[in-house]
Length: 246
Image 1: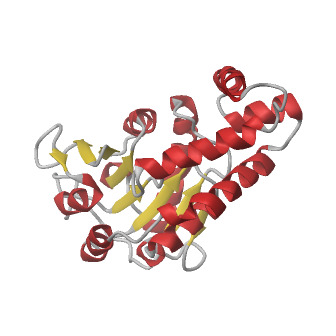
Image 2: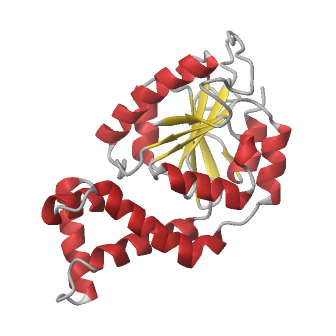
C-alpha cells in the first residue's frame, strides 16, 4: 500500500524528465530495516516475532518452538502466514501484536542519525520508503529517527512480508513501478533502490530498476550504470546518496 506523506499522490518534488545516457537517478526508493536502520534493530525485531510466535506453543521448550516455526516458515513463506494457517489468527493481528511488543521494549534502538539526516537534506531528490514491514512500523521508525519529512511516501506490505523470496518481491515491485510513474513520472531505469536482501534486488533487476544498492554491514554495493562501473563500494547510505547525486 502506498501512502503519500503530504497529500494524494502529490509529491513535494516536481516530476522531471531524465534522458541522459548516464541514467541519472530520478528517485531514491529505500528499504527501512537493516538499510536505514541498524541490523541490531532488525535482529531485535525478529526476536520479538519469535517471542510472539512462541506463545502459541506453551507446552514446548523455546528451542522446539523455534524449530517448529522454522518448518512453518519454510512451508508458508512467513511466520505470520504459518500462524494464520495453523491457528486461525489473522496475519495483521499477529503482526501488530509482535511489532507492538517490539516497539514497547526496543523502540529506543531507533535514534536520529546525524550523517544520514544531513545526506538526505543535501541530496534533496524525490524519495520514498519501500518496506516489507507494516505501515505503522514505518511511521514509528521515521518519527523516532526524525526523518519523516525527508520522504514523499511509503510503500508498505502491511504484513504480506516479502520474506526474502523473489516471487513475492516481483509482485510487490510491479505495483511499485506503477506508483512511481503515477507520482513521479520516473521510468524504472532512473530509480535507485536500496535494500539489504538479494532477493529484492534480483527482482528489481528483472523489473528494470536501473540502480540497485545492497546495504549490508555498513557497506553499500552498487549494481547498475553508476560511474561506468558494474560494482563499487562505499560506506553505508549517506555516502551512497552522494555517489548517486545527479
